[in-house]
Image (cartoon, rainbow, N blue to C red; front, side, top):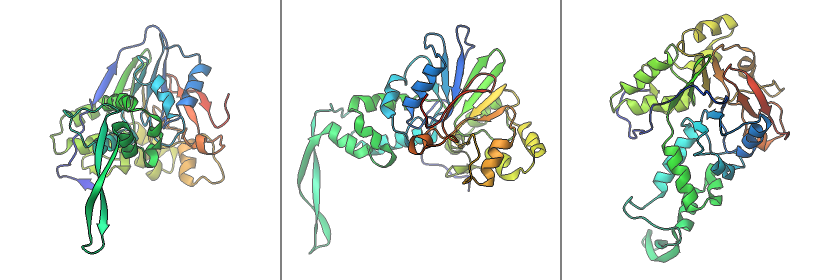
Length: 332
């Protein structure tokens, strides 16, 4: 759906965060984590990751779906860990914002008692009427308000821990650019517009007026699944895997995009690493097509939390575009 009207929400996240070359250690890259931080820790241990000199860059979607969210508290905020904003991260911010009835000036401590009105249907009038109040701590209220659906993991977080998580996600950039000895590596959660360089995408976002900027920003972490699609962008992932049927067509599409980068790492769209009998034709294309310097590195780590599989898991990449480790359902 095309969009040319003002959008209700303007994201305040920085467009891009820049990183100088790592002269002390090694840079690693990972796709969507989706609450599988226990598997991530296992992967980092397996590659001998050293937080004193190494760095890890993530495509975003830190939350939802997986079963080890509390382990993220050991990782987010570390000097060596950096992430882009993912669509699930952005949805969590919306949940936090919509669940908190207090203004920023009305600060509550976790154990403060709050009173919430209790209403009951009056069958004679057909209206709900206040019949009393329910008392609970602010932490109990907040956990009940935010910990539902995919976010039940927040029941295991204290109010101060949820504040740490919220502040961290609210600081995430839409894009990252990392200098390496091989050239610049870009990262974005979903995709950039077909045919644009990384810098042109940054300028494209930055030059938007207030009515168009949210739609363009949202496209970076939703891709073709965004609620609104920018009128002046062609969908990258759709063009490669939905429209192309031969490698020559892929080569033509890929050559037009992110030409100013050594590599562009993207997540959001799940890429199996092996074909299974239940896979459709689009999965075959995702595996077999060589997308050159455009790398889709979300391999469905949360799927490996839910079923035994060797087709989905967590992949760790180096600065050459190579997957150096893949963890599926079986622990090392």
